[in-house]
Image 1 (cartoon, one colour):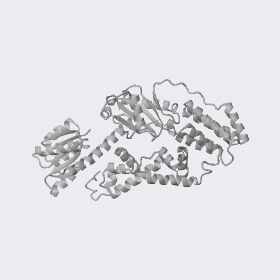
Image 2 (cartoon, rainbow, N blue to C red):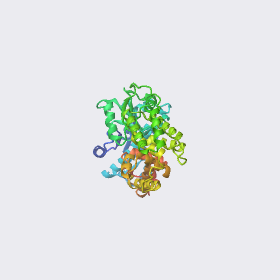
Image 3 (spheres, rainbow, N blue to C red):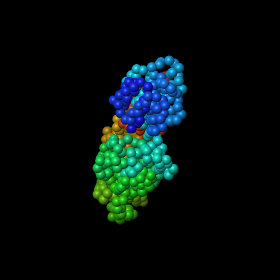
Image 4 (cartoon, helix red, strand yellow):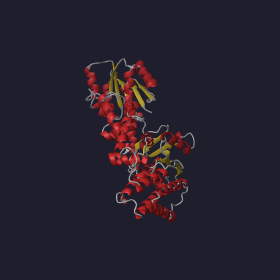
Length: 502
C-alpha cells in the first residue's frame, strides 16, 4: 500500500527499523533501504516514497539537509528524523526542516509504531482526498489528469453500479456533483456517496472479482445495507473509468422508473424495460370511496386502502406510479369534501411528499396516507403528544449515538413507523434522523479531542459510532472546517511545533 525509505549508514540500524515495519506496520508493504542521502535521493527520483525515515549523522549530506531537500522536491513525502543526538540544535533543525517527528536512538518500538500509525492515518486521508477530488472533477465534466486517475485504481477497466437504499426522494432529478467516499466492509470495492446519503456509487475492477459481478454485488448489499431494500442498476460489462459519468446519467434515469417501495432489485442497465403507462385511479375505486365517505364507513375505507396496497405490491408498482395514484386519491377525496377545513389539501400534499421517501412498504404508505386524509392526526388515541414523542426520540438518539443506529432500528425500539418518525423530526425538531445523529456524534468527538488531544483517530471514530476512520474524518471536516488532527492540535500543549498523535 505505502512505500517507506529507511536511510542510515549503519546496517544494524537499518535492519532494526525494517524489522519493526515488517512486524508491526503492514500498511508499509514496500521497504527501501539506503546508506546515504545521495543514494536516497536517487531512489526517490525513481519511485514515489510516502515516508522517509533518516538518521541525522551520516557522511556527506546529513539527515536534516536531506529532509530539507525532500521537502522542496517531494512535498507530499512525510519525514521522520532518527538520531543519537539530543542537542537542541538538532531538534530545532528538524522542526525547521518540516519533519513529521523526531526520535532518539535507540529507537523504542512502541514510539515508532505510534508515529507510523499517525502518518498512515494521514496518508489514508490524503489518498482519499485525492481520489474524491479527482472523481468530483470527472463527474462535473472537468478535465482530469488521466495518469493520476488511473494510478488511483488497480485497473482502468471497472464495473459500475448505482445503488439506492430505500425509496426515491428529492434527488431523483439532481445531478452528480461530488464524490465522497464511504466504507463498505467487503474488500476490493470502491464506494462513494451519490446525490444523498441513501445513494451509493460502486466501482470494482475485474482483477478483484472472484465470481459473477451480480452475485458479488448481491453479497455486498446484504452485508452493508441490511436495513433497507436496495435497488441497484449495474453496468453489464467492464468499462473505462472515464465513462463513469455517462453510466451514472443513464442509471439515474433508469432508477426513477425502477424503484418499487419495499422491494429490492438488481437490474442490468441494458435490461429491456417497457414504457410506463399513465397511472389512473379506476372508476370503480372512486365509486367505492365516494360511497364509503358518504355513509361514514371507515372500516370499509381502511379495507379499500389495504387492498390497494396489496395490489400495488403484487404488481411491483414503481414508486413513481404509486405517487401519481396517491396524488389522485388526495385530489379526489378533497373534491368529496375530505378532509374538513382543518386539513387543507395543500397541507396533505406536502406531507404526502415526505411519506414517499420514508415509507417501508405500500402498506405503510397507504396506512399513513389514510391517516393524513381521514384522521385528525396520527396519534389521536395515544397517551403522549407528538411533541413529547419527538423529544423521546431525540433523547434516544442522544443516548445511543455510539451504536450502529438506523431508522428501522430506532423505529422498532421507539415503537413508531418510519414515515411517522420522519414527520415528527421535521415538524417538531426541524431536522432529519441522519442530520441529528451526525450532530450528536460530532459533538461527542469534539469533546473527546478537546479532553484527550493525543488520542488515536480510529479510537475516536469507534467511540462515536463510526467503523470507518476515513469517513469519520471527512464528516468531521465538513462539520468543523478542519480535520480531527488539526482540531486536536489546537488543544495539545505542543501544538505550535509538534503535530498531535493521531
